[in-house]
Length: 209
Image (cartoon, rainbow, N blue to C red; front, side, top):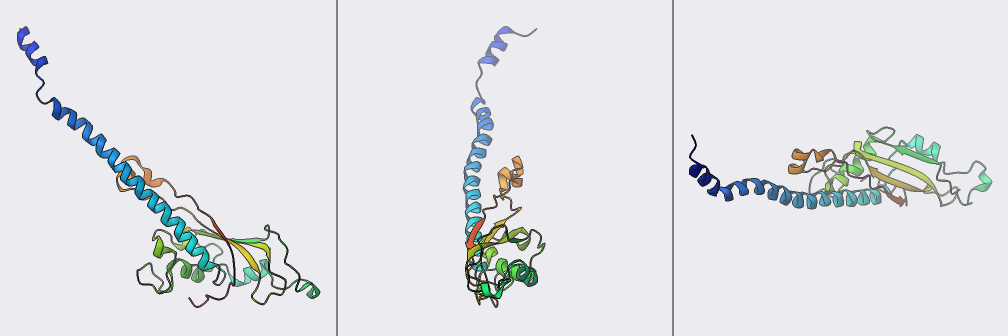
């Protein structure tokens, strides 16, 4: 038979309560702390992606077209069908477009790799002409989608070719979250495409970059 006084004494005994509370609350506090840190890290990755795409778009605007030359010439001829129209403004028709990617589909692999990896062909510091992956190593050629569109700028017969609108965007880049990614599976969250649109200037000048 249990002594009622012993049972009462057991329920009144509060030794170890602080340790129990600590074991319950410390993991929660650490998880919240890790969430704050990784939220900042995620925002850093987001910002790196945006800046890398902005830089890559500016570089691509003064480089050889990132699509095969034959396809580019067919989609955006330099001269008008009627030679008498050379010198007139080109049409503003964005439905005339050419897209390549992802996975290098319809892309000039060498030209796209130069934009992504820079002049040294690798994502490494000290590149004299850095590429996109020097700003964000996660972005590789197979993650990019490039679209050229008729802009209405320039004129038929322009010696440097048509002036187009180019859109550069990223695909299938996910956040790298060491703690929350492992615990909650958030490593599958995809970074938005962040399309960057820019008017091309001279799609020849950086062919030797």
